[in-house]
Image 1 (cartoon, rainbow, N blue to C red):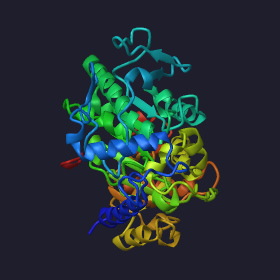
Image 2: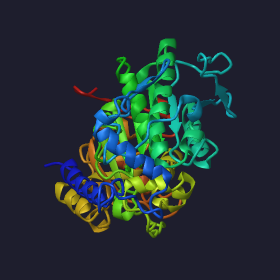
Image 3: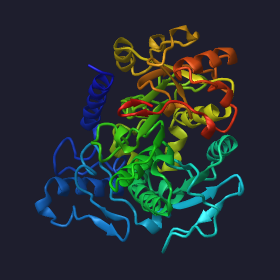
Length: 459
């Protein structure tokens, strides 16, 4: 029994519990009308859609996919639509309006990339020999958000790279969360098209690192899936508290998985069931390396919020705009990108994670992540080895330990709890004592020579 088993069990229980409260079909009679106070026009249409899709003979064309040139087709049948995932089809690409902005050390103010009718990088200083980073926001957001610029600046301070900020603000601020979640498929396809282009120019896929928050994490997953389908698997995905509603209990086609890149690392900061606790981050592990920070559910300095009384199932999110929803989502969901950005900024202090035991895993899942006493507090490096500790952030994929890790932080920036002298000894321990590794920490990260983990072991 591993960590995923109890997580999957718990997630399934809550999914079933949510179904019992869904207002998709009237509880009294199949012909009863939904109460007007809880069933706006959108839900009435959703109810009809559910019925017709569960009885496809009533409408032969209801599951016909919508196709777009160079992006492919987007089915609206299973697994993209189900009782546990009552999402509409995605909006058209021009409505989602995906945009890319390239930032480099030579052009720190950024350049917008032309994506249509053809991709044109001539007016940019994109360099195929450098690492390429994609930073993607979640719902009710866009690239004007301060955290995206902070993260971009932290990257460029530490490494000479191509940093793309992915803006899908129009698609992320649609009528409601359900539509925004569906629109992620279009953004993932746009990134896949762009990824194929830059690989054709000479970009090495293993030098591509996609970072995404919330719904942006699943966009990164779709991007990775598209690249893997053309034998160009990208090097890394960092998922910052990947969105739970509409994804947690779904199949691998629908959500981020550890197969979407050579290394997938995940930060869990709001891992509580959506129903009844209004948690927005995934509970179960989704990567090669999963960091459950401060229990993974409620972050220090964040306060619990009262769950909106009219939200009893995923379908109820159709009644709430994404802007309103974003005000309800706890600050714990946003801490993931703060922690990751500070992991890039901190030079003498790391967020150290210790591998969790089966007992700790079960205790965490059984208490919905709230039993912080179950977290292995890493206040001393004596218990760390190359097999049971990893470091959250840029260095994660370069270190050998894999699995689920518990991390503790302070409640204010820079959040880190460890001391510089401990960090030097710790890094030398878990990086297998590579000569001079610590001295190179203060140079650009691309200069750090650490072991690389392949399917055949360390080399």
